Image (cartoon, rainbow, N blue to C red):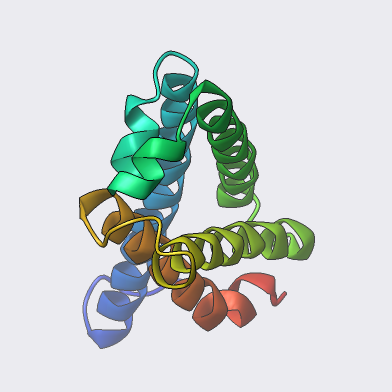
Length: 147
């Protein structure tokens, strides 16, 4: 459908188009950060300590746990990257949503149930990204998977 370059219809269509590009860019950025963070966990436990702040978590983080965390991050980042380019694929969309749900559940359990981490920068940013992504993906599911 063509819109004239004036009027509300064009403005809404243009704004929505820019919003979709912004979201896809954020998805690719989130995936890229996850993949680079994954690589970092194989060189040092420091990046894992930033995500899991607190004395209990620090005492339990070693090379093995950092590598497991890095592998999970690599897997979820890869799924999200594929989903960013194929948002109309129901299976990929659901898998990407699941990665955010699992991540959110994991961080909430470590924080509130196991009490191994503190609500500091690393944890808060992980919670914001995962919860925001869950809300957005559920709200936009019908749009991306219709047609």
